[in-house]
Length: 100
Image (cartoon, rainbow, N blue to C red; front, side, top):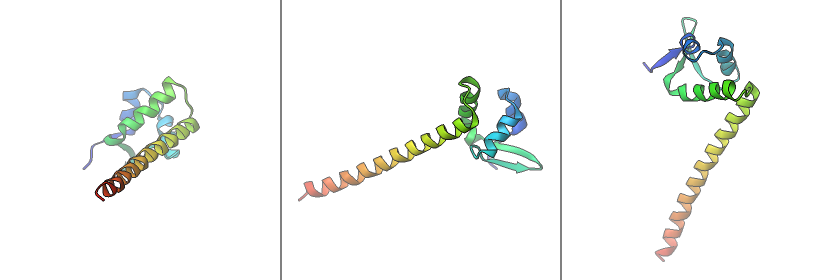
């Protein structure tokens, strides 16, 4: 079984409103597991949760803003990966022509 933490524990530890957590789930920004009517966040998703919490409470970014920032960062990450893939392919092509 993967490590996880309940919504209620997160609310106590991070001193946030339970509605903020629920809103993150509703917006599709967090994926949770539900068991016996208890929502759990996987430990691997804690850094994302912490990032959203910091942005919301420290920088006062609202939920639509969090969603936009999250999508932009995901797109940037995807583009960086595509760029790395293209550079790898280009290097392979250059290596073939150098051998000729």
